[in-house]
Length: 501
Image 1 (cartoon, one colour):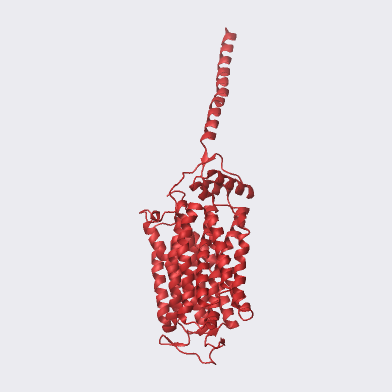
Image 2: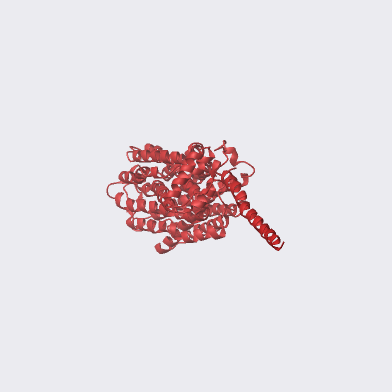
């Protein structure tokens, strides 16, 4: 009996042990299959999982270089204006009209390119805009008259407006935590283009003439077209229009290039058939944000190009210390250090190019502080502060000072106006969802050109009649922009890009 009891007691634990060994096998098999079948991921999750790597460095260099081309084409007007004023004996309003028409072309085509980019792809529109801009830029160098020059530069403005798609492609491929750092660094490329055109102008304008300067300025854009093939179409765009296969292939290629891994499962993203519609920006969800963004874009563009053109006027005519009671005095031959043309206009002297070069470097001076502000204070507060400081330094320009003082004021102004553009570009690209991102940025870029179109008549016409009045107008507009920035309803710091409306 004792043996039977012993056997019975031994049998129970063996049965339990067998049950315990079998239970995991029964549970594991269906759970594993079920998880594999149900696991999915979105493009946003894939971008975050893949992380930052070699692809993003290449993306930053190639798409960032679009800023070099854009800066050279836009800044070209500032360094060529004194020369064409003399060649065609132009009045102040005629010189101002050149810049205005460039931005008119930019304004019209920016909306068109924004709509097309949301419907047909960012990469295609970027590629086409570079071909368009390079072609008409080269034609500009053969302009036989002032009218032809204005028309061809307007066409260049149309092409340049498509360059914003490069920023959208960068934004849509960058992981969330890197956007606030990498996108402001793109300012380095704009600075490079600005400094390059000033340096080239100081050498080419006095020697072989402005027409060769225009041809040389077109070369970077033509070269850049050849390397666009290394950058794919936005994966976020592809899934938004139902092309998951292309999006997945792109993400797998990026993961391989970065030596990283893809998320497990299947790429699944809801398709939005309604893309690139203006009425989406007027949706109650985005209406207030959209209207305030437009005000800010107008303000920043008005201030930025106003500062650039005002700098040229200050150097060309020495307005600060040659004004009394808001009216410009005429210069005598001894008081002006530059070169005077037969038609009584002023060409830039070497010292003027040096001052313009130094003040332009200011565009990168506050970049580290701008990056810190964007990432720690947030987009809204950072933008409000830089716009407020822009207003202060615009008013300080009215102080008659030495060349060193003038350089200091212009240096700080260029730093603040560049920081404004940095922040609003990032905010606009982040605040809208993928189906309307290109349109949102395109229309904002288009409307802001109204500010850019107005700026030449204030900086090159009104400033010659009332220097203080022009500065007060610029400063007042900046204050309005600062209030709009501070009261924006959405903060995008640390927020993932929205895929659906």
